[in-house]
Image (cartoon, rainbow, N blue to C red):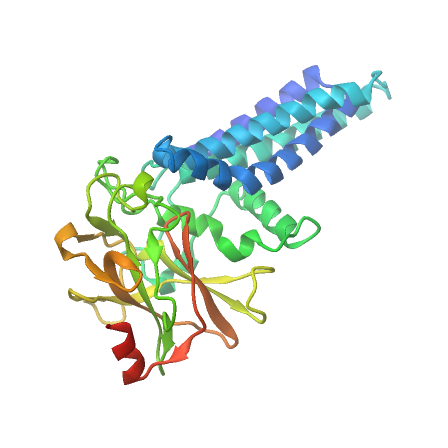
Length: 361
């Protein structure tokens, strides 16, 4: 309810400002500025945030901060530049000016509200801020992630960039391949924060905090696609996944398997799958303790630094992660950890005793 009121207030304030202060052409220019600002901010916020986090600046606030900063800077620059291009104020009468200005004001307010809501979802705040996306009762399992909700504005701005990254602004790296179900990803990554944001499970990690073997990382059997992976300990700015110390903590919902149909490239779209269980190589199996309930994606898993082991790829908390990849033609291409860490996967192989023996070396 609060987020809906906030969205309405932003839209009404924007429409009022446009109606009172903007001409017809200026209103149109500002609408285009807002659209371009969304595309620029979503395209570059991760790159800018990485430069800050890798140097020990910004922490979990780097991603939302960079998104908002890039949006504001781009919008202001285009707004100022449009004044030079528009030139003389063309007056087409009161009614056209009032209709266009109010409509553009509402649209810009809608976009601005969407950016604010997405930025809040990126921030290390309570899962209920800006809203509780997952409304299922009981445990949140992989099968129940689809029962998410949104407030439309955040779906619109993220969908706008997703569409652009697959269309006329497409490149070799599509946003919808690296961040399918983007809003689900953001909200799930906050489930382990807890009340103490300094000791909870972080939403981000170093980009190389998740590691996989160079071969046979993905194996399949009749029921599952299984990924062998390790999560590095240590602080984020030093290449790890923790806010401090050498231990490892995560929630299963932070480990997404990204699969794609067709060519093994990063164009087009991918689909995200969530774990149904996991097996710590030096610890117990993580699975549901209730029949048909599924693995709780919000469960906080803590692994002491003494339990980290060194295998091919480095010292980490090593585990086998089990996924049910439903739908024909899907092939695993990435293992994604939290909001920003990702590991490219080798071609899947059929599980055999020889492959397991090779992985356990």
